[in-house]
Amino acid sequence: MAPVCLMFRRSFPVLIAALTLACGPAPSWARIQEAVAKDQPETVSPRRGPIRSEVTVPGILFSRKTAEITVSPKTAQAFKVVSAVPHGSVVKTGDLLVEFDSEAFQDQLAEAERDLQAAEVAAKESQRELELFLEQHPIDVEQAELTWTQAQEDYKYFVEVEFPFDYKELEQSLKSAQDFLDYNHEELKQLEKMYKADDLTEESEEIVLRRARDDFNRSTFSFERTKQSSQRQREVGLPRLEKQRKTAHRLAELAYHRSRLELSLAEAKKRQAADKVKVALEKAARTLAELQADAGLFRVTAPIDGVVYYGKCVDGKWPGIAELGIKLRKHGAVQPNEIFLTVVDNSALAAVANVPEAEAAKLQLGQFARMAPTAYPEGRVAMKVAKIAPLPNTDGSFETEFELAQASQLRLVAGLNGSIKVLIYDQADALLVPSKAVFTDEADDTIKYVKLLKPDGSQTRAEVKLGATKGDDVELLSSTLTPNDKLLLK
Image: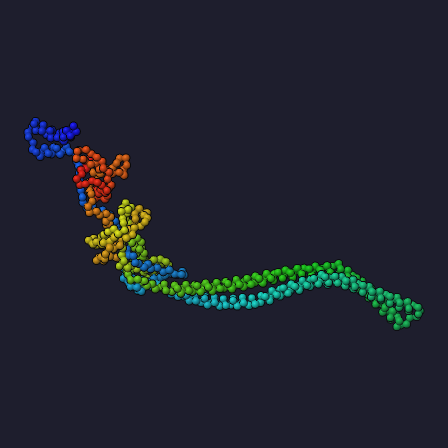
């Protein structure tokens, strides 16, 4: 029954056409075929053909062999220009690039030499003073020890012997005065007694008696004086002496410790002064050495053969050429560590470009590329991908370097712009279909499929994997489709 129905479905348009013929004038066979074709669904068949995918980005030439020129002085210097080669000059290794004014530097160098000589003299003098001090230092320490030892011995003798003896001396002096008084008194009494018994006193005897009385009076006075003095000494003099000697002993002790401390500090000061002079000498020597090293910076020569560019290359470009041109005029000035020139070897050229993020994933090392320099619109430079940045720039693009695949007849130099076309895909026998024959799954937009019209008129869905696109065509990858299959366009 099914074959009959299928036959009927296929012949239905023919029957309609026959009825039409029966009811009207007879049409041509072409009109009949056209009527049948209009009733068929629109289909397309896969076809084999080449497909190429390219990405075009703006690029710029740069050199992989450059020598950035800067002056990096060890001392602070001003580099005023006397002369400089023009931008674009072709130079050889050793050619003079820039000459700076060195007059002020020569004065500074001479001053540094004088400072070093003065520092050397000061260092010798300081060292000799330290040596003499170290020779005398042990003697001074020994003298301080001796003085303190003697002070201790003297104080001990005073406390144990001299001071107690002073009290005994007072007692003995007082006793002597008392004895002398007693002797004179007794002698006077005896003389008076003797002369009184005679009843008559001669003149000579009177003189003796008078002398005895005078001696007695003097001894009495002497005794009183000695007694007073002894009392004064006991109550005031000796206590004062004891206090003075004790204070003197304490001062001697303090003087000893002070002398030891001062001797120790004096040694430290001498050594510190010697070290300070030594540091000053080292600094003066270092300053002179740095200035002598800087002496070669005032004539800058080319380290390699190449072309002189003003400034520094940044991403293949040369910003600041005008500003550096002003600085490198006569009487201009450049700053230390500033890159003011670059010698470029144009025999080692490469190109750099920023490839958009959407295309960067398709890049591979070694891919073929062609550059059309802006200066030579009809010229082409064969290149290949040499380096791809692992991380994107801030704008999402990936910096990519291209090396020349072969020597070019064009006069290429660093800094030339151009358009770089990279062949990112090339398939000579690809299976192609119109992109409108590929549909997207409504539930999962990552799934692509085609609607296949079978010979019996039924339809089936076949998932496909897409490759490169070319115009309205898209490549089918890993597909079982053949050019004999018919795919629905709707």
